[in-house]
Image 1 (spheres, rainbow, N blue to C red):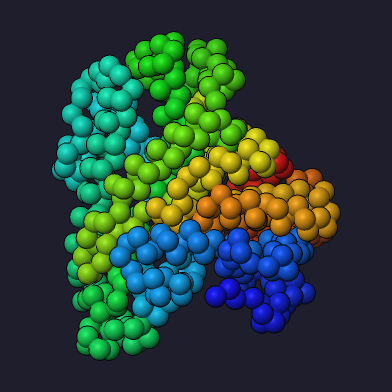
Image 2: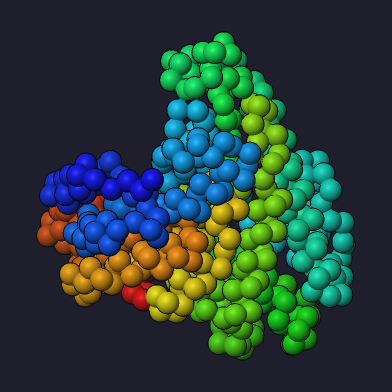
Length: 437
């Protein structure tokens, strides 16, 4: 049954009045909830606290149920960290503790000569194609998926070995006593005592990977505009000397976030393929790994230290966050929603995170925010975070922090006063607020 009552209202009103950055406000909702609930969440978002996340019950319950969990348990889930969904009382909260750089796997595919002996030791089954000679898109994509599966299986095996010893190295009797089945089994939660001992592999850089693969497909195989070696030379030189090629990629190759039918179809295919290959491995604790497109701040850290990519991204630019498109390529809000909702979120029990920034210029337009939330739910989205910001205020707050003591922003899975961030993070928030949809 749908839940919305006076306690829901009290919590939202309190967060608004007290302007708290924590605890985070995670709102479970379905398309069938009342307009009153949608409007309340919209008012809360418009208050400027920027600490609200929308959880789509339909997508998340289906995702957890698909992993063999009882439906009655799946209905009682909560947030177990930043946004990682976990089943209450009976699931170990070990969701986003392994992060996977998707662009590293693309690099292995484009540059097989850079795969080290250590890589091959840890990731058994990596594609052996030196030099890269893929004659067709299907062959190249198959090489990428082979490498992806090898990396996922290798990481899972290493983590499973550590997981099998966790009840010895990190016994947790007090916490185990709060989780269903541990006492009945007489086992620590890390020993397999919990009903569900799930863990997630958090895949980072999805939007950048998607655009990069699609650019390879179009440039090299469909249009035959360049060769693989020419693309690699452009990337190695950060497009210096290849400015015309980069301009063509940016202007003539459609991007994720622009609501292009072909790109959206590929987003669905790619997401389905990586979900299938990153779920089901044994985690050493009596449970399985589950796919996740959750991201923390590694889209920034990895991006700052990564070479140019085939989507036209320069060396050092950030990766795309969660399942967001790169902000430089995103269209208006309808295009954004149509694109991100092409990702089958119900294949990712660890969550698919979408960050939405709306301009303060919308005023108190509750109907606009409610429409965004409803579109996200109707499209089958998983988890959405909302920021309502003014770019000019952010720039001024960086220069004159004393004027903005309570300016709050949602960074990754947490909310914080903008003035407390270091300059690097302030610049990242300002840069992403360029796109106001």
